[in-house]
Length: 172
Image (cartoon, rainbow, N blue to C red):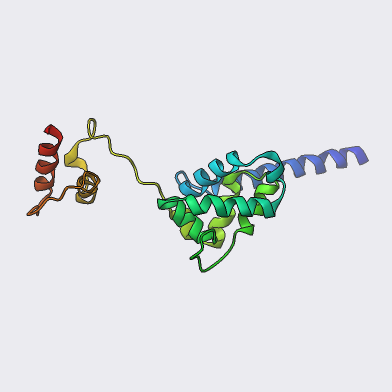
């Protein structure tokens, strides 16, 4: 009778762990924390094994990495306090978990609870001009294409004006 109770307790414990794991997995939706996860994955890959175990060394390396970061990566560093102009500093929310070998997805999930804007960061999508239908793009995206080429569309008012300008530039 005592061993049966032990088996039931084990089954209940395993079931509760499984359910907990499933609810934790569901907290990050597809595409959530894109910049956070990618940045931390790349960062952890650059660390050697002696640094990975020491939160203070990880923080120093993180600050160095953030000093070189640009675009959305720089914004992510700013939110964590990894840049010189940051108003807050929550780096220990990243460095300690890295030292315990916690995966970036879990770290970002916790960061999302502290500051939701961390997980709202997204990398800009690259537009393949050979395959894309310009008519389906937004004017904002058409302007980005022109800005990327250091071009302006003077007198462009409607979407078709921007498309004509891009088509003309693609031929040259």
